[in-house]
Length: 263
Image (cartoon, rainbow, N blue to C red; front, side):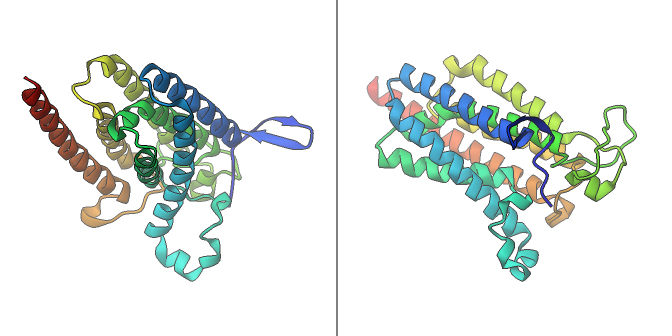
C-alpha cells in the first residue's frame, strides 16, 4: 500500500500532499543552510550543492536497501517489489548510512575536508529528518503502539497505521521524533562555535539521534525485532553510538597531537 499523506491543495489535476511538500521543503531548506554555511567557511558552494543533492539520492537508496535487507525473506519471494519505493518501505538509519557513504566519496573526489563538510551538512540533515518525520506523522507511517494516553491519536482508513490497528488510538512516535530532532538541532546551534574539532557536530548529532531513536523504539508499533528482543533500529542505534564515540576519541587525540606539534 502507499499513502503519501493528506492532500493539502491542488494545482490543476495535480494533488499536492504532505509527502511532496515535506520533500520539497526539506530539500530547499537544506540547500540554503548548506550553501550559507559553506560560503562562511570558504568552501566552494557549487560543490556543496552537488554534495547535498547526491547525498539525498544516496540516502534514498540506502534507506530502501536497509529496509529490504531486514525484510529479505519477503523480498526474496517478491523481487519485483524491491524497486517499488512508492509502496512504502524506507529505513531512516539506512538513509543516513547511504548519505554518509556518498558524502565521503564526493568530498574526497573534490578534495574537500571530509570532517568540515560533515559539520556543514549536519544541521540540514537533522532538520530534514525532522520534516520527514512530520510527513510520516500525517501519513500514519512509523507509527506507535496502541495506547489510551491523551497523547494518542486515531488515523483514518487508508493510512499505514489504520491498516495495522484500525481505528485504535496509537502514540504519535513520528511527532515525538520530529520534536526531538529539533531539540538536537538547537543543541548543535548552541555549541557550533565552541566545537573542539572538525566533525564534532556530525558525530554528536549521530549520538544524540541514536539515543532518541533507541528510546522511541520502545513505543514504535511497526519495528522488527532481532537479538535480545531488541528492535533492529535499537541495535543499529547502539552500534552507531559506539562507532561515533570511537571516532570522537580519535578526532580529539588527533587534534591534541596536532596542537602539540604546533607548540
